[in-house]
Every structure is written in C-alpha cells, then in structure tokens.
Image 1 (cartoon, rainbow, N blue to C red):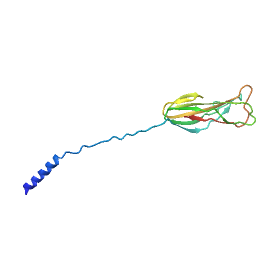
Image 2 (image 1 turned 45 degrees about the vertical axis):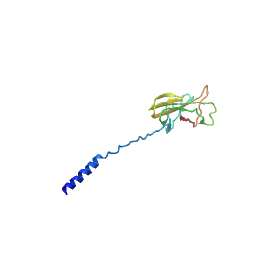
Image 3 (image 1 turned 90 degrees about the vertical axis):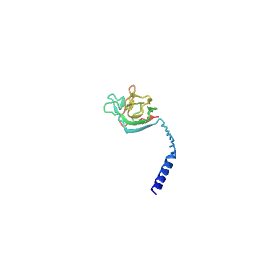
Image 4 (image 1 turned 180 degrees about the horizontal axis):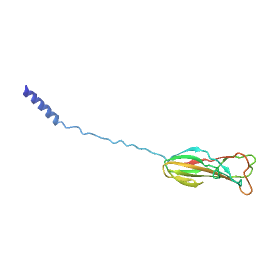
Length: 157
C-alpha cells in the first residue's frame, strides 16, 4: 500500500510537471484627450472714476479712482482685449462729447503692461486683470456735475 501511494504521488507529480503553462497575454488601452484653447473671465470688482482738477478727465487713474479687477483662467492660445465703450450714462447737463478709452494690464501667469490693444495670452494659468477707463473732454469742454457710468467689456477669446 505504501508503494502504491508513492507510485501514485510520483505519477501525479510527473503529470503536473509535464503540462506546459499557458502564456500570459496583454493588451494596451490607449487614452486620448483634446483640450481646446479656452478662457474664463470672472469679475472681482468694479472700478471707480474720479474727475481731474481741470474737469476734463474722468478716470480710474485720477487720484481717488480705482481700476476694476477680473480674474482670467486660461489654457493659453487665446487673446485678451477690451471692447470700445458703447454703454454710458451721463447727466442730462453734460451735452459735450466724451472720448472713452478703456485699457487693461495683467499680472500672474502672464504679465502685460497697460494697453488697449488685444494681446495674446500664451501661457496657461491664472492672471489678475486691472481694467481702467478714462473719459476725456477736449477744448473748453468740461464734465458736468452728476453721476456717470460706463461699461467696459473685457473679452477673452
């Protein structure tokens, strides 16, 4: 009986070692993704314009004035600009022409010195944008007393 068990164990062992193992197979899974150039503008605060001592400039650059602030998040590959001012509210007593000049500057992911010209944002990341506005009168024209409001559109595309 001992001999039979030993012979049986030996034959089972031989049967196990004679079988060839199956080779493992693999496959590669590819992942693709596309990010289009994109930009998000978030307005942080509105600006304030104050009048100059000669009453010919109403600007966020004048003493007491402040720039509006926005945050721009981008992948890069976009352009940042300000549109010409088209929406204004002026007192009824102000009947002379005003030239409105919007400008912007950025700091953060990309630094742009103050400009009114469309500028490429080539670097991905977050930038803080300072938006300024100046209204000017020419010749002998002056700003009248009252409330003034103008809208500057910051464009990222």
